[in-house]
Length: 237
Image 1 (cartoon, helix red, strand yellow):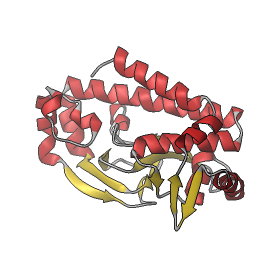
Image 2: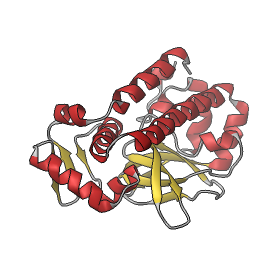
Image 3: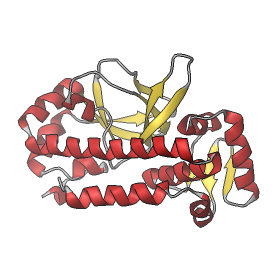
Image 4: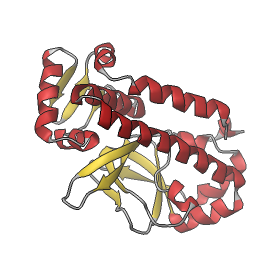
């Protein structure tokens, strides 16, 4: 029944029609602006986001001010909803890493519908598992692979989520994605530009050679895609 739902967000589109219709009166569309902070770790969630385009990063902040991306969410997923499975406090921060649009709903309304909908709770649990798998892969990647291989994987992941070869990503944003200093990202990006794999102009990063990017990426890109596909096949909503 989900095929008749008109939503560019795949999480919403995959819901049974009856559950989607429970949410529909409360949904509205907003712009996701680059760098917007959607939640702070430890804060009470007020809204749940379903990206229609763009990318939301889940981040961990350290006392010295360093911030590291631990998961990226595009139109396939939801930000904020999985935290409501165990309470209304956000365990991680959320920032817009790539601009776009999202359907949003107040957390109180979402929680009310979730209490009435086993299918919605099941979908959230599956989304939570998918985000946890991505976070685990990112943690392992950060510990095991070099900056270039990690950057290439994250750019491929961002390309998959944004469905675009042109990404509005700053070098500061890339550094946060990798948990490294900006000069490390700059050095790798220059090398990739010289190889004809990337172009960077006026804040827009263009992936001009996706195949070349895949060659230089670590195996994490294929591993997380395979694990995500296995999850969607084995545990349908």
